[in-house]
Image (tube, rainbow, N blue to C red; front, side, top):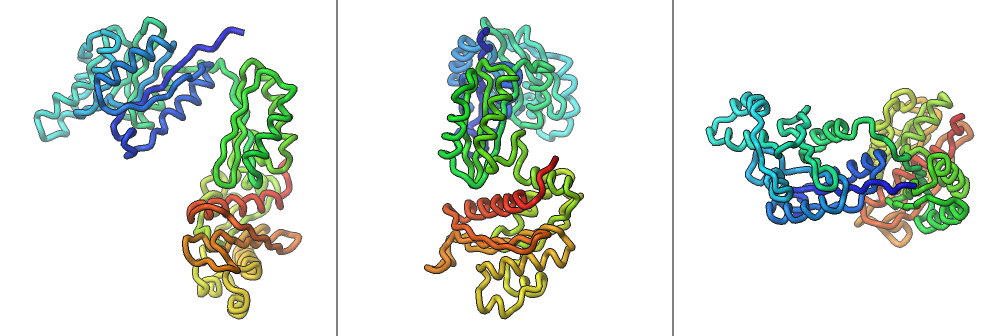
Length: 408
């Protein structure tokens, strides 16, 4: 089997290396390149230093068939990518008059006459490079030949970068898409060991395990198995993981819940205290959620639990807000209020304060209403306030997922 062409990704911007901005371009580009049949061997971020960028570009262009750069193509003083590429390829920058003319309307919006000088730098193109027109911004992309392949310069803003990358790659999808299996209610080590055992008889498959709070994702890559072999490996791993695996196509937990609810023709609702609306947010992030999600109530105070969800004051006084009894009453209250078939409630102590020996930080109670009745459960989650809240949110969604009929 011939080896895949190699690619490298370089993101340029002092804001990236100082932590002022998060580099999301590298992840998105790497996924697109894998689908296009490339092997990404390196991802690198550099500040706005012409000499340093030129040195790295020269090295990467000598090592890889494709080098993609994002950032540094705009009109400000720190947009140095064009100059760095010119030094690396030893090729001059030439002003493209058609691009320059198109920038005149942009120049007209500026008061300072010196702005034109900076804005017109976006019309400077490497000699013999192919221009990739801008669709949402002003800076065009450029594709220039290198001794080994191609250097592709793209703008930094993702909404500007994305259409240019798609235009360059076109319909070039020679790679086999990875298989993505998502799990919850288990540990990273357990998932890894189960997946490795399942893959023992499958050659040409690479395994990656990605962990997040209350979630583990198994990603299987084709390294010679081919599409049929990779799918067979995915089925084997999914079977080994069992019901902790909620998705075999990369769908989120909320997406799976909405799918199952739609297929079953039921209605969902939630009552939240410690999760503060995260469950409702996750569900409404899913297109089509309006077909099944009636709504939710964030009842943070005891007064609102009583007024909005009809939680008995005596119950709160006897058992406290963080209790199975309160969680059950909250779930029943939101089900009665909305007419939902399935309702989930959360009440807990997210921290960092508020805990006690009996009810420590991280304790969360869940209430669940289904056609079979009301049930409660509790979990003790590790982590900081944000970690406890996201773990509680995913656990609540998983409780609903397990209670719903499986989509056929």
